[in-house]
Length: 337
Image 1: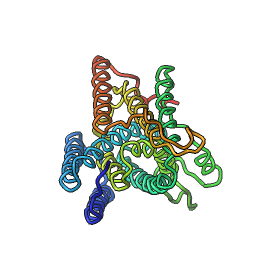
Image 2: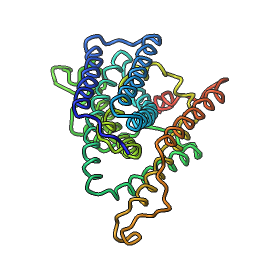
Image 3: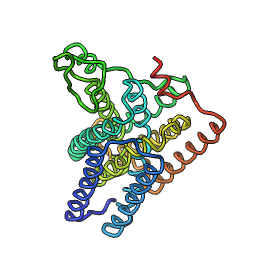
Protein backbone atom coordinates (compact mmCIF):
# COMPACT_ATOMS: atom_id res chain seq x y z
CA UNK A 1 0.00 0.00 0.00
CA UNK A 2 1.29 3.46 -0.92
CA UNK A 3 2.67 5.51 1.94
CA UNK A 4 1.53 9.09 2.33
CA UNK A 5 4.01 11.60 0.97
CA UNK A 6 4.20 14.91 2.86
CA UNK A 7 2.08 17.71 1.41
CA UNK A 8 5.07 20.07 1.44
CA UNK A 9 7.06 17.59 -0.64
CA UNK A 10 4.28 17.23 -3.20
CA UNK A 11 3.82 21.01 -3.46
CA UNK A 12 7.55 21.74 -3.84
CA UNK A 13 8.06 18.88 -6.31
CA UNK A 14 5.16 19.84 -8.55
CA UNK A 15 6.20 23.49 -8.55
CA UNK A 16 9.76 22.58 -9.50
CA UNK A 17 8.68 20.15 -12.24
CA UNK A 18 6.23 22.56 -13.82
CA UNK A 19 8.77 25.41 -13.64
CA UNK A 20 11.36 23.20 -15.38
CA UNK A 21 8.90 22.21 -18.10
CA UNK A 22 7.84 25.83 -18.67
CA UNK A 23 11.50 26.95 -18.86
CA UNK A 24 12.18 24.26 -21.46
CA UNK A 25 9.18 25.34 -23.52
CA UNK A 26 10.13 29.01 -23.31
CA UNK A 27 13.52 28.18 -24.80
CA UNK A 28 11.70 26.82 -27.86
CA UNK A 29 9.59 29.96 -28.12
CA UNK A 30 12.62 32.25 -28.06
CA UNK A 31 15.05 30.14 -30.07
CA UNK A 32 13.28 27.91 -32.59
CA UNK A 33 15.71 25.57 -34.33
CA UNK A 34 16.16 21.99 -35.42
CA UNK A 35 18.17 20.31 -32.64
CA UNK A 36 21.10 18.14 -33.60
CA UNK A 37 21.25 14.47 -32.65
CA UNK A 38 23.88 15.26 -30.01
CA UNK A 39 21.81 18.05 -28.48
CA UNK A 40 18.69 15.88 -28.42
CA UNK A 41 20.58 12.96 -26.88
CA UNK A 42 21.99 15.15 -24.11
CA UNK A 43 18.57 16.53 -23.19
CA UNK A 44 16.86 13.12 -23.30
CA UNK A 45 19.59 11.68 -21.08
CA UNK A 46 19.22 14.63 -18.71
CA UNK A 47 15.45 14.14 -18.30
CA UNK A 48 15.82 10.39 -17.84
CA UNK A 49 18.49 10.95 -15.18
CA UNK A 50 16.23 13.54 -13.55
CA UNK A 51 13.36 11.04 -13.37
CA UNK A 52 15.61 8.37 -11.89
CA UNK A 53 16.93 10.85 -9.33
CA UNK A 54 13.43 12.00 -8.43
CA UNK A 55 12.42 8.40 -7.80
CA UNK A 56 15.33 8.16 -5.39
CA UNK A 57 14.13 11.28 -3.57
CA UNK A 58 10.62 9.79 -3.34
CA UNK A 59 12.21 6.67 -1.85
CA UNK A 60 14.03 8.73 0.76
CA UNK A 61 10.94 10.73 1.69
CA UNK A 62 8.16 8.13 1.46
CA UNK A 63 9.82 4.73 1.32
CA UNK A 64 10.28 1.96 -1.23
CA UNK A 65 6.61 1.50 -2.18
CA UNK A 66 5.87 4.96 -3.62
CA UNK A 67 9.31 4.98 -5.28
CA UNK A 68 8.59 1.65 -6.98
CA UNK A 69 5.18 2.91 -8.06
CA UNK A 70 6.78 6.05 -9.51
CA UNK A 71 9.42 4.12 -11.46
CA UNK A 72 6.85 1.64 -12.78
CA UNK A 73 4.36 4.34 -13.74
CA UNK A 74 6.99 6.57 -15.32
CA UNK A 75 8.43 3.73 -17.42
CA UNK A 76 4.98 2.76 -18.65
CA UNK A 77 3.92 6.35 -19.44
CA UNK A 78 7.25 7.00 -21.17
CA UNK A 79 6.78 3.96 -23.39
CA UNK A 80 3.24 5.09 -24.26
CA UNK A 81 4.65 8.54 -25.07
CA UNK A 82 7.00 6.94 -27.60
CA UNK A 83 3.92 5.44 -29.22
CA UNK A 84 2.46 8.97 -29.36
CA UNK A 85 5.47 10.04 -31.37
CA UNK A 86 4.49 7.70 -34.22
CA UNK A 87 1.28 9.69 -34.66
CA UNK A 88 3.13 13.00 -34.30
CA UNK A 89 5.43 11.97 -37.15
CA UNK A 90 2.43 11.14 -39.31
CA UNK A 91 0.68 14.44 -38.49
CA UNK A 92 3.82 16.46 -39.25
CA UNK A 93 4.14 14.71 -42.62
CA UNK A 94 0.42 14.79 -43.36
CA UNK A 95 0.30 18.58 -43.01
CA UNK A 96 3.84 19.19 -44.32
CA UNK A 97 4.88 21.15 -41.23
CA UNK A 98 8.19 22.98 -41.91
CA UNK A 99 10.95 21.31 -39.89
CA UNK A 100 11.91 24.60 -38.23
CA UNK A 101 8.37 24.92 -36.85
CA UNK A 102 8.03 21.35 -35.63
CA UNK A 103 9.47 22.26 -32.23
CA UNK A 104 6.72 24.84 -31.72
CA UNK A 105 4.07 22.32 -32.72
CA UNK A 106 5.49 19.79 -30.25
CA UNK A 107 5.62 22.49 -27.57
CA UNK A 108 1.92 23.24 -27.99
CA UNK A 109 1.17 19.51 -28.13
CA UNK A 110 2.97 18.90 -24.83
CA UNK A 111 1.08 21.74 -23.14
CA UNK A 112 -2.25 20.39 -24.38
CA UNK A 113 -1.32 16.85 -23.33
CA UNK A 114 -0.45 18.10 -19.86
CA UNK A 115 -3.75 19.96 -19.52
CA UNK A 116 -5.82 17.00 -20.76
CA UNK A 117 -4.03 14.51 -18.53
CA UNK A 118 -4.33 16.77 -15.48
CA UNK A 119 -8.10 17.00 -16.06
CA UNK A 120 -8.37 13.23 -16.54
CA UNK A 121 -6.31 12.56 -13.42
CA UNK A 122 -8.50 14.80 -11.26
CA UNK A 123 -11.66 13.27 -12.69
CA UNK A 124 -10.28 9.73 -12.36
CA UNK A 125 -9.20 10.25 -8.75
CA UNK A 126 -12.63 11.63 -7.84
CA UNK A 127 -14.42 8.74 -9.54
CA UNK A 128 -12.19 6.10 -7.94
CA UNK A 129 -12.76 7.60 -4.50
CA UNK A 130 -16.53 7.24 -4.89
CA UNK A 131 -16.81 4.29 -7.24
CA UNK A 132 -13.97 1.77 -6.98
CA UNK A 133 -15.77 -0.59 -9.37
CA UNK A 134 -14.57 1.70 -12.16
CA UNK A 135 -11.51 -0.58 -12.20
CA UNK A 136 -13.66 -3.17 -13.97
CA UNK A 137 -14.19 -0.70 -16.83
CA UNK A 138 -10.58 0.52 -16.80
CA UNK A 139 -9.27 -3.03 -16.89
CA UNK A 140 -11.55 -4.24 -19.67
CA UNK A 141 -10.81 -1.12 -21.72
CA UNK A 142 -7.05 -1.72 -21.46
CA UNK A 143 -7.44 -5.39 -22.40
CA UNK A 144 -9.55 -4.33 -25.41
CA UNK A 145 -6.88 -1.79 -26.40
CA UNK A 146 -4.16 -4.42 -26.11
CA UNK A 147 -6.09 -6.91 -28.27
CA UNK A 148 -6.78 -4.19 -30.87
CA UNK A 149 -3.07 -3.32 -31.05
CA UNK A 150 -2.18 -6.94 -31.75
CA UNK A 151 -5.00 -7.45 -34.27
CA UNK A 152 -4.05 -4.29 -36.16
CA UNK A 153 -0.41 -5.42 -36.34
CA UNK A 154 -1.29 -8.96 -37.43
CA UNK A 155 -3.61 -7.61 -40.12
CA UNK A 156 -0.95 -5.03 -41.06
CA UNK A 157 -3.32 -2.14 -40.57
CA UNK A 158 -1.33 0.98 -41.38
CA UNK A 159 -1.22 3.49 -38.57
CA UNK A 160 -2.58 6.64 -40.12
CA UNK A 161 -4.07 9.96 -39.16
CA UNK A 162 -7.57 10.70 -40.35
CA UNK A 163 -9.08 14.11 -40.04
CA UNK A 164 -11.84 14.07 -37.44
CA UNK A 165 -15.16 15.92 -37.54
CA UNK A 166 -13.69 18.93 -35.73
CA UNK A 167 -10.97 19.44 -38.32
CA UNK A 168 -13.39 18.94 -41.20
CA UNK A 169 -15.69 21.47 -39.58
CA UNK A 170 -12.85 24.00 -39.30
CA UNK A 171 -12.12 23.62 -42.99
CA UNK A 172 -15.75 24.37 -43.83
CA UNK A 173 -16.37 27.39 -41.61
CA UNK A 174 -12.98 29.14 -41.37
CA UNK A 175 -11.00 30.88 -44.12
CA UNK A 176 -7.95 28.62 -44.32
CA UNK A 177 -4.92 29.25 -46.48
CA UNK A 178 -2.71 26.43 -47.77
CA UNK A 179 0.61 28.09 -46.91
CA UNK A 180 2.45 28.49 -43.61
CA UNK A 181 3.59 31.87 -42.34
CA UNK A 182 6.23 30.91 -39.80
CA UNK A 183 4.53 29.86 -36.57
CA UNK A 184 1.57 32.19 -37.09
CA UNK A 185 -1.92 30.78 -36.74
CA UNK A 186 -3.44 33.74 -38.57
CA UNK A 187 -2.02 35.85 -41.38
CA UNK A 188 -3.03 38.25 -44.17
CA UNK A 189 -3.30 37.11 -47.79
CA UNK A 190 -4.36 39.57 -50.49
CA UNK A 191 -5.59 41.98 -47.83
CA UNK A 192 -7.78 39.34 -46.13
CA UNK A 193 -7.22 37.76 -42.73
CA UNK A 194 -7.03 33.99 -43.01
CA UNK A 195 -5.92 31.10 -40.84
CA UNK A 196 -2.79 29.15 -41.71
CA UNK A 197 -2.51 25.33 -41.71
CA UNK A 198 -0.84 25.69 -38.29
CA UNK A 199 -4.32 25.98 -36.72
CA UNK A 200 -5.36 22.63 -38.19
CA UNK A 201 -2.09 21.06 -37.02
CA UNK A 202 -2.67 22.28 -33.46
CA UNK A 203 -6.20 20.87 -33.49
CA UNK A 204 -4.90 17.55 -34.87
CA UNK A 205 -2.20 17.31 -32.19
CA UNK A 206 -4.67 18.28 -29.45
CA UNK A 207 -7.30 15.73 -30.48
CA UNK A 208 -4.59 13.06 -30.66
CA UNK A 209 -3.42 13.97 -27.15
CA UNK A 210 -7.00 13.61 -25.93
CA UNK A 211 -7.35 10.15 -27.43
CA UNK A 212 -4.05 8.93 -25.97
CA UNK A 213 -5.08 10.20 -22.54
CA UNK A 214 -7.87 7.60 -22.61
CA UNK A 215 -5.19 4.88 -22.68
CA UNK A 216 -2.51 6.34 -20.44
CA UNK A 217 -4.63 7.51 -17.51
CA UNK A 218 -6.47 4.21 -16.85
CA UNK A 219 -3.12 2.43 -17.24
CA UNK A 220 -1.33 4.57 -14.65
CA UNK A 221 -4.18 4.17 -12.17
CA UNK A 222 -3.50 0.45 -12.49
CA UNK A 223 -0.04 1.11 -11.03
CA UNK A 224 -0.78 3.71 -8.35
CA UNK A 225 -3.84 5.52 -7.07
CA UNK A 226 -1.90 8.41 -5.58
CA UNK A 227 -2.87 11.49 -7.69
CA UNK A 228 0.54 13.08 -7.03
CA UNK A 229 2.42 10.05 -8.34
CA UNK A 230 0.01 9.74 -11.27
CA UNK A 231 0.58 13.36 -12.28
CA UNK A 232 4.35 13.32 -11.68
CA UNK A 233 4.84 10.18 -13.80
CA UNK A 234 2.93 11.83 -16.64
CA UNK A 235 4.89 15.06 -16.24
CA UNK A 236 8.24 13.28 -16.36
CA UNK A 237 7.06 11.24 -19.36
CA UNK A 238 6.31 14.47 -21.24
CA UNK A 239 9.63 16.07 -20.29
CA UNK A 240 12.13 15.53 -23.07
CA UNK A 241 9.43 14.23 -25.42
CA UNK A 242 10.21 17.04 -27.87
CA UNK A 243 13.91 16.15 -27.92
CA UNK A 244 13.08 12.44 -28.13
CA UNK A 245 11.09 13.17 -31.30
CA UNK A 246 14.19 14.55 -33.03
CA UNK A 247 16.54 11.96 -31.49
CA UNK A 248 14.64 8.91 -32.67
CA UNK A 249 13.79 10.33 -36.09
CA UNK A 250 13.78 7.50 -38.61
CA UNK A 251 14.68 5.02 -35.84
CA UNK A 252 11.01 4.96 -34.84
CA UNK A 253 10.29 3.24 -38.12
CA UNK A 254 12.50 0.35 -36.98
CA UNK A 255 10.56 -0.28 -33.76
CA UNK A 256 8.31 -2.74 -35.54
CA UNK A 257 7.59 -4.83 -32.44
CA UNK A 258 6.90 -1.93 -30.10
CA UNK A 259 3.10 -2.27 -30.56
CA UNK A 260 3.30 -5.87 -29.35
CA UNK A 261 5.36 -4.80 -26.31
CA UNK A 262 2.86 -2.06 -25.50
CA UNK A 263 0.00 -4.52 -25.98
CA UNK A 264 1.63 -6.86 -23.47
CA UNK A 265 2.01 -4.01 -20.98
CA UNK A 266 -1.54 -2.70 -21.40
CA UNK A 267 -2.99 -6.20 -21.32
CA UNK A 268 -1.11 -7.05 -18.13
CA UNK A 269 -2.20 -3.82 -16.41
CA UNK A 270 -5.76 -4.41 -17.60
CA UNK A 271 -5.84 -7.91 -16.09
CA UNK A 272 -4.25 -6.51 -12.93
CA UNK A 273 -7.06 -3.95 -12.62
CA UNK A 274 -9.77 -6.56 -13.13
CA UNK A 275 -8.19 -8.85 -10.52
CA UNK A 276 -7.98 -5.95 -8.09
CA UNK A 277 -11.60 -5.07 -8.76
CA UNK A 278 -12.61 -8.67 -8.08
CA UNK A 279 -10.53 -8.79 -4.90
CA UNK A 280 -12.08 -5.59 -3.52
CA UNK A 281 -15.48 -6.04 -5.15
CA UNK A 282 -18.39 -4.12 -3.63
CA UNK A 283 -20.92 -4.37 -6.43
CA UNK A 284 -24.08 -5.87 -4.92
CA UNK A 285 -24.92 -7.88 -8.06
CA UNK A 286 -21.45 -9.51 -8.17
CA UNK A 287 -20.86 -12.21 -5.53
CA UNK A 288 -23.35 -10.52 -3.24
CA UNK A 289 -21.13 -7.46 -2.86
CA UNK A 290 -18.24 -9.50 -1.46
CA UNK A 291 -14.71 -9.68 -2.81
CA UNK A 292 -13.21 -12.83 -4.29
CA UNK A 293 -10.44 -14.19 -2.05
CA UNK A 294 -8.94 -16.17 -4.92
CA UNK A 295 -8.23 -12.99 -6.92
CA UNK A 296 -4.56 -12.19 -6.20
CA UNK A 297 -3.18 -8.72 -5.65
CA UNK A 298 -0.41 -8.23 -8.18
CA UNK A 299 2.69 -6.79 -6.46
CA UNK A 300 4.32 -3.66 -7.85
CA UNK A 301 7.65 -5.44 -8.41
CA UNK A 302 5.93 -7.86 -10.79
CA UNK A 303 4.37 -4.95 -12.71
CA UNK A 304 7.78 -3.29 -13.04
CA UNK A 305 9.37 -6.56 -14.18
CA UNK A 306 6.70 -7.20 -16.84
CA UNK A 307 7.04 -3.66 -18.21
CA UNK A 308 10.85 -3.80 -18.31
CA UNK A 309 10.97 -7.24 -19.93
CA UNK A 310 8.25 -6.41 -22.49
CA UNK A 311 9.88 -3.16 -23.60
CA UNK A 312 13.38 -4.65 -23.67
CA UNK A 313 12.35 -7.70 -25.70
CA UNK A 314 10.24 -5.56 -28.06
CA UNK A 315 13.03 -3.05 -28.66
CA UNK A 316 15.85 -5.59 -29.09
CA UNK A 317 13.74 -7.81 -31.36
CA UNK A 318 12.80 -4.78 -33.48
CA UNK A 319 16.36 -3.58 -33.92
CA UNK A 320 17.64 -7.08 -34.73
CA UNK A 321 14.89 -7.77 -37.28
CA UNK A 322 15.45 -4.45 -39.06
CA UNK A 323 19.23 -4.21 -38.89
CA UNK A 324 19.46 -4.78 -42.66
CA UNK A 325 16.55 -2.51 -43.51
CA UNK A 326 13.39 -1.02 -42.11
CA UNK A 327 9.76 -0.61 -42.80
CA UNK A 328 8.68 1.93 -45.31
CA UNK A 329 8.54 5.07 -43.27
CA UNK A 330 5.06 5.78 -42.02
CA UNK A 331 5.62 9.47 -42.54
CA UNK A 332 6.46 8.86 -46.20
CA UNK A 333 3.41 6.66 -46.63
CA UNK A 334 1.18 9.32 -45.15
CA UNK A 335 2.81 12.15 -47.09
CA UNK A 336 2.27 10.25 -50.32
CA UNK A 337 -1.43 9.82 -49.73
